[in-house]
Image (cartoon, rainbow, N blue to C red):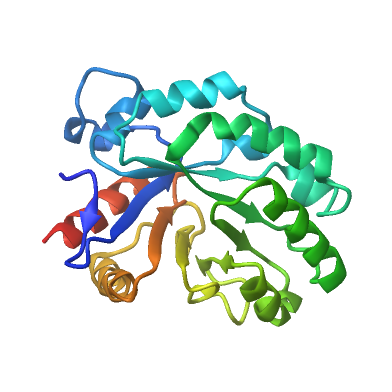
Length: 249
């Protein structure tokens, strides 16, 4: 299985999971030796770090992870809940500085950051713009937002202004999140499993349709990510490998 899925335009499609655990069901697909991350990175070309949402990691930990994967591998790091859920994007400058200082240990393998917002956080343009200004002053890379309050349907112009991408999500939480929105430079799919969130696997027809969408989007020049978060029953890794194989044909 190739590490990267590349179209005729030489743009990479990043396919991975929320976390890099290699379960028994897919263990035979991966090398026996190495850490879970090293084994995972031998077959997939990106991963979403969700543990950063719950607790900080040292700069040296991120650096060790970066050193253990291929050069083309990329990490998406989830912004801590202290910022999104506790402070709710307000007065976050010091917390952001600490977080960014930690995850820049990934170096060039830091692909993007994910900002998943609480369902109770309504769109407030003043608060959101102030936060995006602060974030962009400290971090110049791609930023993905996953809002979960319907009022964020009115945020599109602000997201475009600050080059923030809105994730396409399944199951959908908003009337506008079935397709990527915001900046067209980055498009990010986040698939949690449907109908049973975090558990259900995606079937082959769904993945075939998704593969065509990703190829079209990549041909248009966007950097494309697709992360499977249906990890509770091991479906994420299987689906990521299946999609990777479809894109490699």
